[in-house]
Length: 67
Image 1 (spheres, rainbow, N blue to C red):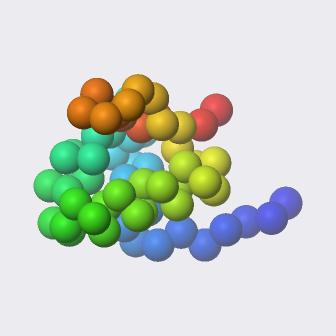
Image 2 (cartoon, helix red, strand yellow):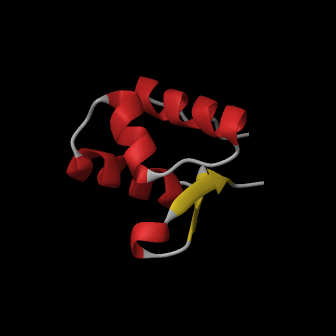
């Protein structure tokens, strides 16, 4: 199996989603205390790597764990 090393930020995001079921961009900004643009890049990367699934568009976007 090809294991990927996750960053500390990615681990925190996944832990939050496991606990709450869903996460938004604003949740990540508060959780990691990062800028909106940095958070967007991290979330896009996690979606691309099949760690998270993007649900919705624009302001209603949230992310869940890919099953």
